[in-house]
Image (cartoon, rainbow, N blue to C red; front, side, top):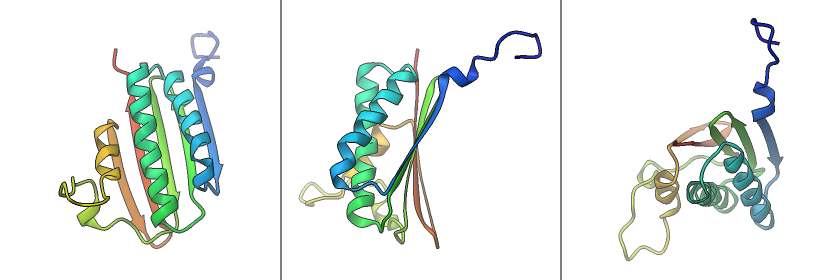
Length: 140
């Protein structure tokens, strides 16, 4: 109940889902869950698809370059979806933290792409690993 005596519906639009030990074969399930969370937050189909792609790029980076386990936390509340991808790797080099690589480079576009398709993307690295936090907000 709220202070005004009305039912509190915040819990109805707030959800947290945690996937621990994500590996490459589970990336499809991560995409499915992120897409569902983005739609729950009210993102339109295009924004939901782009945000899902952004998260996928970061999860693949964690699985490929990080050190396990990779954990994905998906939080939906109100008009936003927040995803944190955590691994125990040493971090992302500053030179690779979202800059577009030269056109002749074989890889290195994942973080750049994720930044383009997220409203906010932060990277925190420390002794215990790396956390990449992505946020998408509904735009009306």
